[in-house]
Image (tube, rainbow, N blue to C red; front, side, top):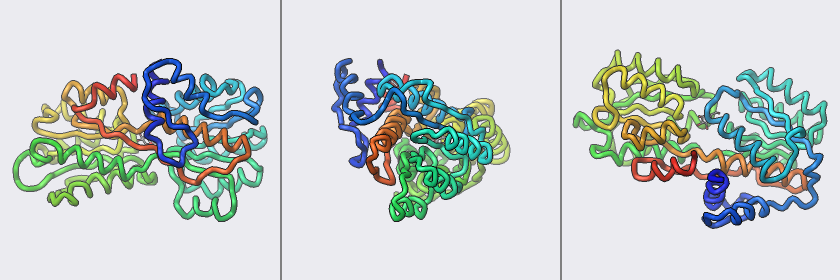
Length: 354
Ligand code: BGC
């Protein structure tokens, strides 16, 4: 039930291009039912419609939450049949995923929802789907603007649902600026940091890396980058990178920026093993608002994160698929807002995501 309530609250912050009817926060079961009812399914054969979903990698913590909500919403709230929804694991291998998409085409699914392994494969995948007459909703990994402009120019039924990664990066930077010493723990007039990056092919990784630091420099803060290393969104890699960095740079490191919470949770293990204390002699920020990370903020062992609204994104993606099933056109880009998470609101966010 809580999840339904959350989706209601979140739907209210979705941008204007969403098909969802904004429902004001109303903590009643009735309102939750109304939210699903607000999606107009008239003209959609929910009993028989088939949906092909491929997730870049099931092992990804964040995409697991996303996938769970996507299937829950499609079946429980919208009434699609579980047996008509195929969900594939792309296993972080584009060739494997392209095969899955070909199988969806052969099976003649009515619509696809795709989290590409490589967003650079969007032009090829879009053409495959378009030639087969199957609309596609891309999620989480944004194709280039050139590609989404092409969908519009050529009237291709393809769309993207995601979140503006510049916003999440900016929020991370602001969280550091909002600490008592603005991130300058040793008072030497500059913020010395390490950056643990996701897969650099993703816009999310590129923009979070850039905009977190830009928030500091825009505020007139001097920064020093001690290290920038890719951790591919992975907790174990995050831990290793930060362990090595702490050995190499020691007390010089004032802030650890991680492009996601999985890597930040790995970073926290390394920080604690090195005898350092978050929010006292080092700051740590991530993105996603994984339950464990938000709990750590409540406990004071994590500085901040940014809620990457998988409820809102999953529901918007499903709603785009519904529009396609109804033969309607949709906007090419559909963004859902991020939410800053710090000690001020962590308990409240935790309550909503659990
Ligand atoms: C999330 C990461 C995730 C990635 C997958 C990002 O938006 O923040 O946690 O690994 O998407 O593409």
